[in-house]
Length: 452
Image 1 (tube, one colour):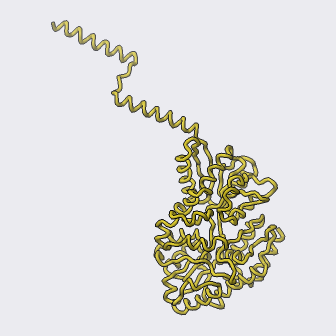
Image 2 (image 1 turned 90 degrees about the horizontal axis):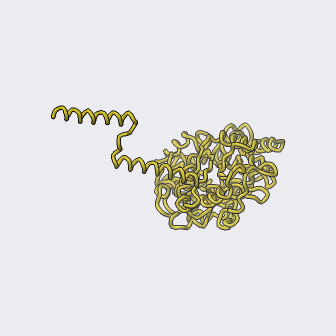
Image 3 (image 1 turned 180 degrees about the horizontal axis):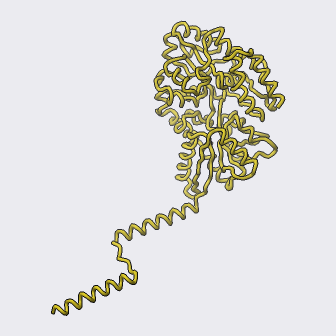
């Protein structure tokens, strides 16, 4: 019996070794096999989906814009399941991106499908008879009557629209109501710039702080004030007019606010985007500041102690029938001629930036004033969010009052050089250094521009 048992065990051992030697794998448990099959199917499905998905590349210099585009892609893919897209975004430093883009477009290779171009750089990409950007008239013109047209003129040439902005950039006055109340000043009584100066004197006397700060190394104080009056750095043909009478009087007005009326000071840090200025303003350093609507995000992010104290109002007028705002700043989103699927890219831009839903997202995602004005009265635009918590409600009611009081900017080929000169030389020499009078400073720069 024992011998028989030993023979059976030896046989079992032999066949086990033989099977292993033939490479037979041990069987997987059923649940592991199912899991493996599911993973393979999922991988295969993703490969199939990837084949159907159109890939785009997008360059920007602003991380916030990446958030907006990512959100738009997700929304697009939900409502356009038969035309899925994916966008690979590269966020570059400001100068690096614009220089890299210029080289890529000039060389004819290496440019992205879609790109953000900042307004003061935009004319660099419209030079020549055939810009390396795709005209967007097909999607812009059907919607133009619902848009702030001036914001499209900034990115146009020879009747062709090449860029779509994120916002109007309506210039407004941010008032610190707590300071105004100390001086007995009601912001709604300030109708003209003369009223503003008079109110500033009350503020300076009662609260001991300046009415405002004036940028001496940037353009956000000066440029809106001349735009209000129909002036600019260039005329419509691109010729420098920086030293015209309106501009000289306006720069002199700013200088007088600092040194004669003593209601303003040069901005701490030089301009309104420095940590020094944020700290100064956050402590109640001045009673107001002139900046575009898109500056609301800076208040929320960098000046938290002013929450509930800042109110937003139109700019004072220069004359009774004058404009109360100006469209400032901006970024035109464009499609390059190197894009391999222009029609789909155009459809996506229409969806992301021109549609009603896209316009609402520029407010809810970015906190910007949409270029599509017919959504400004939509209930969604009045819903509570971090901006209404900070500034109160009624922001878009105020914007509706001034939507027709915004001039376009003449973004000719010399605009980048003119804007740079205003930032680097004109303001500083006339207002801070005082090495030149406002007239001398503007004339010297205008002459240099005319030679270029």
